[in-house]
Image 1 (cartoon, one colour):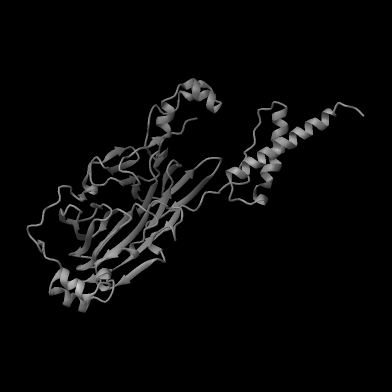
Image 2 (cartoon, helix red, strand yellow):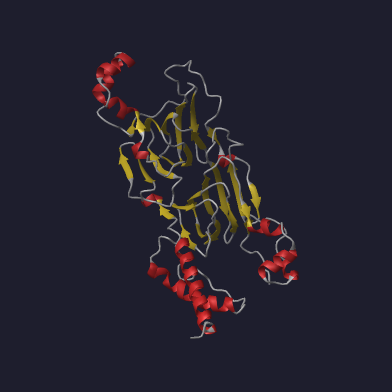
Length: 414
């Protein structure tokens, strides 16, 4: 018997071992995929093993048969099946139950009639960031230090109520008010909040009377359960607190995002509010972005935050990229929401003849982003040429710095 193994046998044994190793890697990257779904990755890697053994530079996309594994990142908020409707207003929401990818943000689109009151309530597990789309409303809020604030809001205005701060929202003349509520916890449901009527209804009359005095008997007689939204008369032009001596808040809960200075680019504009401009907003940053027809919010990512988008007007294409070849592209119209995980590369491409306006909320009080043009411009041309396999002269033609929003008529490099 020949003590030396056959060279061909050794070769194919090595191929099999390397192939099996590649297969295990594929399963590690995609544990939620079935063996059948990734078996072609294993078979494809056999050819790669042969090329690798021969020293070939040819490569194979290890995920070519496991693409589009990214979850759905699009949701039509205005058509959500989760909602509430009654006298005084109506609302639609998304949580992780209806939009699973949005783990860090829940959102509500709410309409209040003039005098419609989103009753006194608080959120135990989430801060609330509000944005007025149309109409006018008034909020009241009190914090744990007993400082309070009453403020009126119009289109483009923002409020922020920290977790646990008690507040209310009421519609003002002349027409219905439409606003968005964004919460910094995807598990939170606006329809499962802590409301004052719900609390009163589940507290004995004797306890309420001892706490609130004679008025408790009338309150207990009227309140049988949670009201959520109630229809009331038109609020007075100048509100007066029940206790006019209550201490005013030292931190404003209001910021006029729509009236703030905009950063102007060739392809559009951006207005931004972070914790720096709005100190009370410690967990969320807001952006109002406008894209001219054909414009591109360039390829970029946010190292420190998830991104939530609501399309106010116009249309856009959004492409996201994770890693290992995983990517997904969706189109968006007014009322629809996009959610992009922290660190995922993405772009926004305006489509159609109408300007596209997007409200963007990021899950950090500090704004951070890295754009592809700024990234490339920070590296030597020789390195870029080596990385992309191009001539250095071509690398020199890349943009010299961050473009942010690129106009639709931008000249293509050849």
